Image 1 (tube, rainbow, N blue to C red):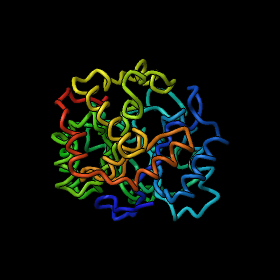
Image 2: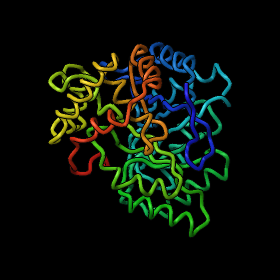
Image 3: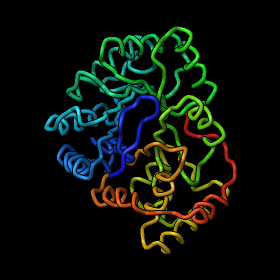
Length: 324
């Protein structure tokens, strides 16, 4: 395993963050408690110390499964992140959003499910257009001061929104957002123009979600919807990667380089992330121990400059996606 520093937090994290959205129930591809334990324990064996979950994943089941496994280890060894914005275990008018009431009650519930006193990283899952950002930042700062949270982060939003939140923190002397969890992969690179320049200016750690494009970069494009997970992403999440102008060409080039290197397509797409100056630690979500092991093996792949140029050359700008 390789390790890096998560932006201005100073925390040392594995260059792979294990995404835990697959833990729980509700979809055929999700892992129950026993299966989730097997995956987390193998991740720990492989040196992964960075885990990302959310209150909304399987209505809190993901947090409970992750917390149950980590309870058997030294908590200090791990960096655990969760998120707030959407409903957790209970769905009612104040179960979502970023009001003081919602944040405080959802944070308490997340800590309880995780079996922890403190979260290393607490992130807003998306922007809340109904709550003033001042209210949100004051509430999150209070959580830091109470010792319930160590660092704050944000997820997919417009760069001007992230800057507004940073300005509020600076003006009021509040804890700022120090990480950004945004959508970024070979077939979707709009963040290079939108968010990453801001992250670079403020030493913000970046944790791209869906680094394989919901599996689009893991198999030939004509086979994209051959899995239950991919079909779910297209039908329910509106994932458009396979419809972007240059997607097929990019997909085919990933396949060509995978053949040249004798590795999988997913490993090439991840190797591009690991060597990318925009990326701190991509969030790798999987329901397979084998795929997790392959992701770790991808750290050993060395792409030449010509390899990277070959992968990046076909890309064409597309509409900004992933903020809702």
